[in-house]
Image: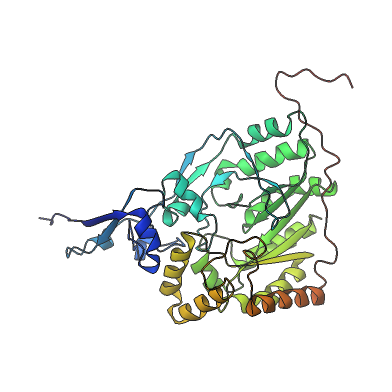
Length: 384
Protein backbone atom coordinates (compact mmCIF):
# COMPACT_ATOMS: atom_id res chain seq x y z
CA UNK A 1 0.00 0.00 0.00
CA UNK A 2 1.37 3.36 -1.04
CA UNK A 3 1.57 6.04 1.66
CA UNK A 4 -0.76 8.98 1.25
CA UNK A 5 1.19 12.01 0.07
CA UNK A 6 0.92 14.96 2.40
CA UNK A 7 1.76 18.54 1.57
CA UNK A 8 2.63 20.95 4.32
CA UNK A 9 1.77 24.35 2.93
CA UNK A 10 2.24 27.74 4.52
CA UNK A 11 0.46 30.68 2.90
CA UNK A 12 1.81 34.23 2.93
CA UNK A 13 1.17 37.29 0.80
CA UNK A 14 2.79 37.30 -2.63
CA UNK A 15 4.19 40.77 -1.91
CA UNK A 16 6.01 39.46 1.17
CA UNK A 17 7.36 36.59 -0.86
CA UNK A 18 8.58 38.85 -3.67
CA UNK A 19 10.26 41.26 -1.27
CA UNK A 20 12.02 38.39 0.49
CA UNK A 21 14.77 38.41 -2.14
CA UNK A 22 16.97 35.33 -2.03
CA UNK A 23 14.54 33.67 0.39
CA UNK A 24 11.67 34.06 -2.05
CA UNK A 25 8.69 31.83 -1.32
CA UNK A 26 8.70 28.40 -2.90
CA UNK A 27 5.51 28.03 -4.96
CA UNK A 28 5.83 24.87 -7.05
CA UNK A 29 9.37 25.71 -5.95
CA UNK A 30 12.37 24.85 -5.50
CA UNK A 31 12.17 22.41 -8.39
CA UNK A 32 15.20 20.34 -9.22
CA UNK A 33 16.24 17.36 -11.30
CA UNK A 34 13.83 16.05 -13.93
CA UNK A 35 11.20 18.67 -13.04
CA UNK A 36 13.40 21.41 -14.48
CA UNK A 37 15.27 19.49 -17.15
CA UNK A 38 15.49 21.58 -20.31
CA UNK A 39 14.33 24.70 -18.48
CA UNK A 40 16.29 27.82 -17.65
CA UNK A 41 14.63 28.87 -14.38
CA UNK A 42 15.12 26.82 -11.23
CA UNK A 43 12.15 28.47 -9.48
CA UNK A 44 8.47 28.95 -10.18
CA UNK A 45 7.33 31.61 -7.68
CA UNK A 46 3.80 32.98 -7.73
CA UNK A 47 3.21 36.17 -9.70
CA UNK A 48 3.62 39.43 -7.82
CA UNK A 49 -0.05 40.34 -8.30
CA UNK A 50 -1.36 37.15 -6.69
CA UNK A 51 -2.92 37.50 -3.24
CA UNK A 52 -1.12 34.48 -1.79
CA UNK A 53 1.74 32.16 -2.51
CA UNK A 54 2.52 28.62 -1.33
CA UNK A 55 5.61 27.40 0.51
CA UNK A 56 6.10 23.73 -0.32
CA UNK A 57 8.56 21.78 1.83
CA UNK A 58 9.57 18.17 2.34
CA UNK A 59 7.04 16.46 4.61
CA UNK A 60 9.21 13.40 5.20
CA UNK A 61 7.45 11.13 2.70
CA UNK A 62 10.24 11.71 0.13
CA UNK A 63 7.69 12.41 -2.61
CA UNK A 64 8.93 15.79 -3.89
CA UNK A 65 11.15 14.10 -6.48
CA UNK A 66 8.07 12.45 -8.01
CA UNK A 67 6.88 15.73 -9.52
CA UNK A 68 6.61 15.29 -13.30
CA UNK A 69 8.64 17.48 -15.68
CA UNK A 70 6.98 20.66 -16.86
CA UNK A 71 5.58 20.39 -20.38
CA UNK A 72 5.07 23.26 -22.79
CA UNK A 73 1.45 24.35 -23.04
CA UNK A 74 0.32 26.83 -25.70
CA UNK A 75 -2.94 28.76 -25.41
CA UNK A 76 -4.51 31.12 -27.92
CA UNK A 77 -4.60 34.83 -27.16
CA UNK A 78 -6.83 37.15 -29.17
CA UNK A 79 -5.66 40.73 -28.53
CA UNK A 80 -7.61 43.71 -29.84
CA UNK A 81 -4.45 45.41 -31.14
CA UNK A 82 -1.07 44.00 -32.14
CA UNK A 83 1.30 46.98 -32.53
CA UNK A 84 2.91 48.07 -29.25
CA UNK A 85 4.19 51.64 -28.99
CA UNK A 86 7.03 52.96 -26.83
CA UNK A 87 8.76 56.30 -26.30
CA UNK A 88 11.95 54.99 -24.66
CA UNK A 89 15.06 57.02 -25.52
CA UNK A 90 17.12 53.82 -25.11
CA UNK A 91 15.51 52.17 -28.14
CA UNK A 92 15.91 52.85 -31.85
CA UNK A 93 12.29 52.07 -32.71
CA UNK A 94 8.90 53.25 -31.48
CA UNK A 95 6.72 50.27 -32.42
CA UNK A 96 6.92 46.51 -32.23
CA UNK A 97 4.94 43.30 -32.63
CA UNK A 98 5.18 40.23 -30.41
CA UNK A 99 3.61 37.10 -31.94
CA UNK A 100 3.94 35.20 -28.65
CA UNK A 101 3.68 35.85 -24.92
CA UNK A 102 6.25 33.86 -22.95
CA UNK A 103 9.28 32.21 -24.53
CA UNK A 104 10.23 28.57 -24.78
CA UNK A 105 13.94 29.39 -25.09
CA UNK A 106 13.99 29.62 -21.30
CA UNK A 107 16.74 32.24 -20.97
CA UNK A 108 17.04 32.68 -17.22
CA UNK A 109 18.06 36.34 -17.58
CA UNK A 110 15.14 37.38 -19.81
CA UNK A 111 13.87 40.84 -18.84
CA UNK A 112 10.42 39.96 -20.22
CA UNK A 113 9.73 37.35 -17.55
CA UNK A 114 7.82 39.75 -15.22
CA UNK A 115 5.15 40.24 -17.91
CA UNK A 116 3.75 36.78 -17.13
CA UNK A 117 2.57 38.10 -13.78
CA UNK A 118 -0.13 40.05 -15.64
CA UNK A 119 -1.57 36.67 -16.66
CA UNK A 120 -1.62 35.35 -13.09
CA UNK A 121 1.36 33.11 -13.88
CA UNK A 122 4.89 32.77 -12.63
CA UNK A 123 7.85 34.58 -14.11
CA UNK A 124 9.80 31.37 -13.50
CA UNK A 125 9.11 28.10 -15.28
CA UNK A 126 5.58 29.21 -16.23
CA UNK A 127 7.12 31.89 -18.47
CA UNK A 128 8.89 29.25 -20.57
CA UNK A 129 6.32 26.45 -20.26
CA UNK A 130 2.93 28.21 -20.45
CA UNK A 131 2.91 30.19 -23.67
CA UNK A 132 0.32 32.30 -25.49
CA UNK A 133 0.18 32.39 -29.28
CA UNK A 134 -1.55 35.13 -31.28
CA UNK A 135 -2.71 33.44 -34.51
CA UNK A 136 -4.68 36.50 -35.55
CA UNK A 137 -1.61 38.76 -35.42
CA UNK A 138 -1.14 39.05 -39.19
CA UNK A 139 -4.74 40.11 -39.86
CA UNK A 140 -4.64 42.59 -37.00
CA UNK A 141 -1.38 44.02 -38.32
CA UNK A 142 -2.81 44.37 -41.83
CA UNK A 143 -5.76 46.25 -40.39
CA UNK A 144 -3.66 48.57 -38.24
CA UNK A 145 -1.10 49.56 -40.88
CA UNK A 146 -3.96 50.07 -43.35
CA UNK A 147 -5.67 52.71 -41.25
CA UNK A 148 -5.96 56.16 -42.72
CA UNK A 149 -3.13 58.39 -41.57
CA UNK A 150 -0.79 55.56 -40.55
CA UNK A 151 2.85 56.68 -40.78
CA UNK A 152 5.26 53.81 -41.53
CA UNK A 153 8.42 53.45 -39.47
CA UNK A 154 10.60 50.47 -38.60
CA UNK A 155 8.55 47.71 -37.02
CA UNK A 156 10.56 45.59 -34.60
CA UNK A 157 10.00 41.85 -34.13
CA UNK A 158 11.53 40.15 -31.10
CA UNK A 159 11.67 43.02 -28.64
CA UNK A 160 9.92 41.20 -25.79
CA UNK A 161 9.93 37.50 -26.64
CA UNK A 162 11.63 35.71 -29.52
CA UNK A 163 9.48 35.59 -32.69
CA UNK A 164 11.36 32.44 -33.78
CA UNK A 165 11.11 30.41 -30.59
CA UNK A 166 10.52 26.64 -31.15
CA UNK A 167 6.69 26.85 -31.27
CA UNK A 168 6.96 29.05 -34.38
CA UNK A 169 7.72 25.89 -36.37
CA UNK A 170 4.09 24.81 -35.92
CA UNK A 171 2.27 28.13 -35.58
CA UNK A 172 4.11 30.10 -38.32
CA UNK A 173 2.71 33.39 -37.00
CA UNK A 174 5.95 35.30 -37.60
CA UNK A 175 6.06 34.18 -41.22
CA UNK A 176 2.47 35.37 -41.74
CA UNK A 177 3.44 38.75 -40.29
CA UNK A 178 6.38 38.99 -42.71
CA UNK A 179 4.07 38.19 -45.62
CA UNK A 180 1.84 41.13 -44.64
CA UNK A 181 4.83 43.45 -44.27
CA UNK A 182 6.31 42.39 -47.61
CA UNK A 183 3.04 43.00 -49.44
CA UNK A 184 2.89 46.51 -47.94
CA UNK A 185 6.60 47.30 -48.41
CA UNK A 186 6.83 47.98 -44.68
CA UNK A 187 10.32 48.05 -43.06
CA UNK A 188 11.03 45.44 -40.38
CA UNK A 189 13.91 44.73 -37.98
CA UNK A 190 14.19 41.32 -36.33
CA UNK A 191 16.06 40.30 -33.18
CA UNK A 192 16.38 36.58 -32.46
CA UNK A 193 18.65 33.91 -31.07
CA UNK A 194 17.09 31.19 -33.23
CA UNK A 195 18.34 29.55 -36.42
CA UNK A 196 14.70 29.25 -37.52
CA UNK A 197 14.91 32.76 -38.99
CA UNK A 198 16.79 31.17 -41.93
CA UNK A 199 13.50 29.50 -42.92
CA UNK A 200 12.21 32.90 -44.03
CA UNK A 201 15.25 33.91 -46.08
CA UNK A 202 13.05 33.89 -49.20
CA UNK A 203 10.88 36.73 -47.86
CA UNK A 204 13.67 38.58 -46.07
CA UNK A 205 15.98 38.58 -49.08
CA UNK A 206 13.28 40.12 -51.29
CA UNK A 207 12.58 42.76 -48.66
CA UNK A 208 16.28 43.42 -48.09
CA UNK A 209 16.73 44.06 -51.80
CA UNK A 210 14.36 47.01 -51.38
CA UNK A 211 15.99 48.17 -48.16
CA UNK A 212 13.10 46.91 -46.02
CA UNK A 213 14.60 44.27 -43.72
CA UNK A 214 17.51 43.56 -41.40
CA UNK A 215 18.18 40.87 -38.79
CA UNK A 216 20.17 40.82 -35.55
CA UNK A 217 21.34 37.53 -33.99
CA UNK A 218 21.87 37.57 -30.25
CA UNK A 219 24.94 35.60 -29.13
CA UNK A 220 25.46 35.44 -25.39
CA UNK A 221 28.44 33.11 -25.27
CA UNK A 222 30.53 30.76 -27.41
CA UNK A 223 30.70 28.32 -24.49
CA UNK A 224 28.14 25.60 -25.25
CA UNK A 225 28.04 24.45 -21.64
CA UNK A 226 27.23 27.94 -20.36
CA UNK A 227 24.61 28.46 -23.08
CA UNK A 228 23.01 25.11 -22.31
CA UNK A 229 22.55 26.12 -18.68
CA UNK A 230 21.60 29.76 -19.26
CA UNK A 231 19.40 29.54 -22.38
CA UNK A 232 18.61 25.81 -22.69
CA UNK A 233 16.25 25.81 -25.69
CA UNK A 234 17.94 28.44 -27.83
CA UNK A 235 20.16 27.54 -30.80
CA UNK A 236 23.76 26.60 -30.06
CA UNK A 237 26.42 29.29 -30.59
CA UNK A 238 27.76 27.51 -33.68
CA UNK A 239 24.31 27.33 -35.23
CA UNK A 240 23.73 31.04 -34.64
CA UNK A 241 27.02 31.86 -36.37
CA UNK A 242 25.97 29.65 -39.29
CA UNK A 243 22.67 31.55 -39.45
CA UNK A 244 24.56 34.84 -39.67
CA UNK A 245 26.56 33.35 -42.52
CA UNK A 246 23.41 32.16 -44.33
CA UNK A 247 21.68 35.53 -43.98
CA UNK A 248 24.74 37.44 -45.17
CA UNK A 249 25.07 35.10 -48.16
CA UNK A 250 21.49 36.01 -49.09
CA UNK A 251 22.42 39.74 -48.99
CA UNK A 252 20.31 40.33 -45.87
CA UNK A 253 21.86 42.95 -43.56
CA UNK A 254 22.77 41.11 -40.37
CA UNK A 255 24.22 42.28 -37.08
CA UNK A 256 25.25 40.62 -33.82
CA UNK A 257 23.97 41.50 -30.36
CA UNK A 258 26.35 40.56 -27.55
CA UNK A 259 23.65 40.49 -24.94
CA UNK A 260 23.41 40.31 -22.11
CA UNK A 261 26.96 40.79 -20.90
CA UNK A 262 27.29 39.37 -17.38
CA UNK A 263 30.38 40.44 -15.45
CA UNK A 264 32.67 37.59 -14.35
CA UNK A 265 30.56 35.10 -16.33
CA UNK A 266 30.60 35.88 -20.06
CA UNK A 267 31.92 39.44 -20.45
CA UNK A 268 35.44 38.13 -21.15
CA UNK A 269 34.07 36.60 -24.39
CA UNK A 270 32.91 39.87 -25.95
CA UNK A 271 35.86 40.31 -28.34
CA UNK A 272 35.75 36.63 -29.40
CA UNK A 273 32.01 36.83 -30.13
CA UNK A 274 32.43 39.99 -32.20
CA UNK A 275 35.35 38.46 -34.09
CA UNK A 276 33.42 35.24 -34.86
CA UNK A 277 30.31 37.15 -35.94
CA UNK A 278 32.34 39.47 -38.18
CA UNK A 279 34.00 36.48 -39.83
CA UNK A 280 30.53 35.00 -40.44
CA UNK A 281 29.32 38.14 -42.24
CA UNK A 282 27.90 40.53 -39.63
CA UNK A 283 28.63 44.20 -40.33
CA UNK A 284 26.97 45.81 -37.30
CA UNK A 285 27.05 45.04 -33.58
CA UNK A 286 25.51 46.08 -30.30
CA UNK A 287 25.64 45.08 -26.64
CA UNK A 288 23.77 45.49 -23.38
CA UNK A 289 24.52 44.63 -19.78
CA UNK A 290 22.43 42.21 -17.76
CA UNK A 291 19.15 43.65 -16.52
CA UNK A 292 17.41 42.21 -13.45
CA UNK A 293 13.99 43.88 -13.15
CA UNK A 294 11.49 42.67 -10.56
CA UNK A 295 11.20 38.86 -10.47
CA UNK A 296 14.21 38.35 -12.73
CA UNK A 297 16.60 39.22 -9.88
CA UNK A 298 15.70 36.36 -7.49
CA UNK A 299 15.36 33.96 -10.43
CA UNK A 300 18.84 34.81 -11.75
CA UNK A 301 20.40 34.72 -8.29
CA UNK A 302 18.98 31.27 -7.58
CA UNK A 303 20.19 30.06 -11.00
CA UNK A 304 23.65 31.47 -10.31
CA UNK A 305 23.81 29.73 -6.93
CA UNK A 306 22.72 26.47 -8.56
CA UNK A 307 25.14 26.51 -11.50
CA UNK A 308 28.05 28.78 -10.53
CA UNK A 309 28.06 29.09 -6.73
CA UNK A 310 31.77 29.96 -6.66
CA UNK A 311 31.13 33.07 -8.77
CA UNK A 312 27.95 34.25 -7.05
CA UNK A 313 29.44 36.99 -4.87
CA UNK A 314 31.79 38.26 -7.57
CA UNK A 315 29.07 38.48 -10.24
CA UNK A 316 26.51 40.16 -7.98
CA UNK A 317 29.04 42.62 -6.50
CA UNK A 318 30.11 43.75 -9.97
CA UNK A 319 26.50 44.05 -11.13
CA UNK A 320 25.55 46.16 -8.11
CA UNK A 321 28.63 48.33 -8.62
CA UNK A 322 27.21 49.21 -12.06
CA UNK A 323 23.67 49.74 -10.73
CA UNK A 324 24.26 52.13 -7.84
CA UNK A 325 24.42 49.32 -5.28
CA UNK A 326 21.14 47.76 -6.44
CA UNK A 327 20.39 44.68 -8.52
CA UNK A 328 18.75 46.90 -11.13
CA UNK A 329 18.45 50.57 -12.03
CA UNK A 330 15.56 51.32 -14.45
CA UNK A 331 16.72 54.88 -15.24
CA UNK A 332 16.80 55.66 -18.96
CA UNK A 333 20.34 55.94 -20.24
CA UNK A 334 21.67 53.60 -17.55
CA UNK A 335 19.47 50.51 -17.60
CA UNK A 336 21.04 49.08 -20.78
CA UNK A 337 24.70 50.06 -20.21
CA UNK A 338 25.11 50.53 -16.46
CA UNK A 339 27.21 53.17 -14.72
CA UNK A 340 30.59 53.40 -13.03
CA UNK A 341 34.18 52.33 -13.85
CA UNK A 342 33.40 48.72 -14.78
CA UNK A 343 30.57 49.70 -17.11
CA UNK A 344 32.82 52.35 -18.69
CA UNK A 345 35.52 49.71 -19.26
CA UNK A 346 33.07 47.34 -20.96
CA UNK A 347 31.86 50.13 -23.24
CA UNK A 348 35.39 51.10 -24.28
CA UNK A 349 36.31 47.46 -24.96
CA UNK A 350 33.29 47.16 -27.22
CA UNK A 351 34.15 50.32 -29.16
CA UNK A 352 37.79 49.30 -29.63
CA UNK A 353 36.84 45.81 -30.80
CA UNK A 354 34.30 47.17 -33.29
CA UNK A 355 36.80 49.65 -34.70
CA UNK A 356 39.43 46.94 -35.06
CA UNK A 357 37.02 44.58 -36.83
CA UNK A 358 35.39 47.21 -39.04
CA UNK A 359 31.96 46.86 -37.44
CA UNK A 360 29.43 49.71 -37.28
CA UNK A 361 31.22 51.67 -40.00
CA UNK A 362 27.88 52.81 -41.35
CA UNK A 363 24.40 52.20 -39.96
CA UNK A 364 22.01 50.67 -42.44
CA UNK A 365 18.75 52.60 -42.61
CA UNK A 366 15.57 50.98 -43.79
CA UNK A 367 13.38 52.74 -46.33
CA UNK A 368 9.79 53.61 -45.29
CA UNK A 369 9.09 55.55 -48.49
CA UNK A 370 8.00 52.48 -50.47
CA UNK A 371 5.08 51.77 -48.14
CA UNK A 372 1.78 50.83 -49.81
CA UNK A 373 -1.18 50.75 -47.41
CA UNK A 374 -2.95 47.39 -47.60
CA UNK A 375 -6.50 47.45 -48.94
CA UNK A 376 -8.98 46.73 -46.19
CA UNK A 377 -11.82 44.25 -46.65
CA UNK A 378 -15.00 45.98 -47.79
CA UNK A 379 -13.27 49.30 -48.51
CA UNK A 380 -13.71 51.18 -51.78
CA UNK A 381 -10.69 51.20 -54.07
CA UNK A 382 -9.12 54.54 -55.00
CA UNK A 383 -9.43 55.84 -58.55
CA UNK A 384 -5.85 57.12 -58.44
